[in-house]
Image (cartoon, rainbow, N blue to C red; front, side, top):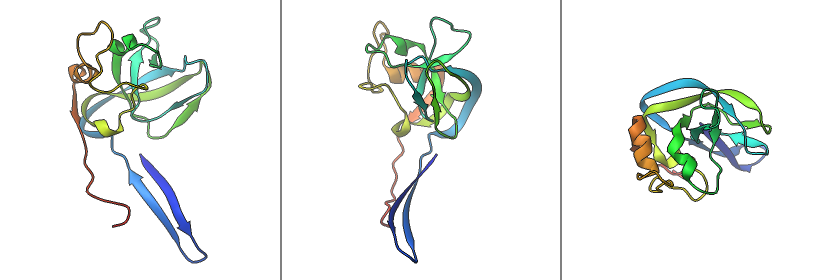
Length: 150
């Protein structure tokens, strides 16, 4: 995914920062899913979002985990791999793609507020990172040696 930020613009030139975010690095496995927005409000579906299986309807959809406690994190199934951001209305479904294994860049994972890879979900006995590794993910942190001012 790319992000563009225009820093300066004159009549004859424009300065722009271009940032490439590579979440899925190597040997990734992808599948189609139905994503259901059950948040009670509009929701922005972005690449890198960690999603969980809907416990009330496990054959139908995946949902974002926005709960106050971390108990839903034991149902993680993967990471959204759409190429663009999408805004979904409340209770809307979207045909999406997700990654369920392979090497991913942890710097671009989107976890619920207050959750890290070292968080232990309620009644899980293992960390979020361990759950992702158990699904077949290899978790790496990408270090960029470039700067916008090079």
